Image (tube, rainbow, N blue to C red; front, side, top):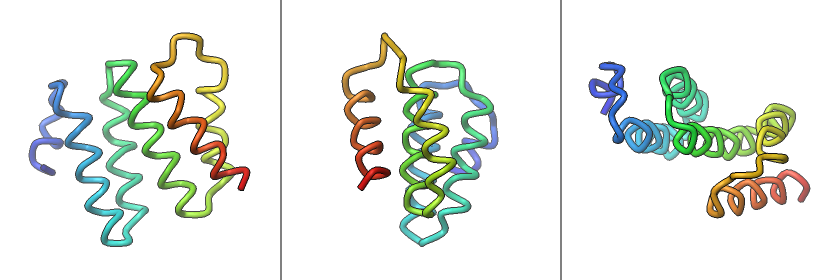
Length: 101
């Protein structure tokens, strides 16, 4: 997966591969590396839906890291988006609830 992501492909699998690799790091309790994978992928992201998906995953990791300030700042990007996908809207609301609770 790391080799594929290093190729800087703009392929449809890029977002899914990034999330998979980030999840692997997360399950090893390496949240910092998980966030770094998503940050690299976000730099090469050119699809709005995929970029939002990566950001939501990053928010989840930031919350897990107790970095509520950064998580909240990233979530603010979703607050007033009118064309937000229903699934992404639900995920953003769930993450906002986790921050509040």
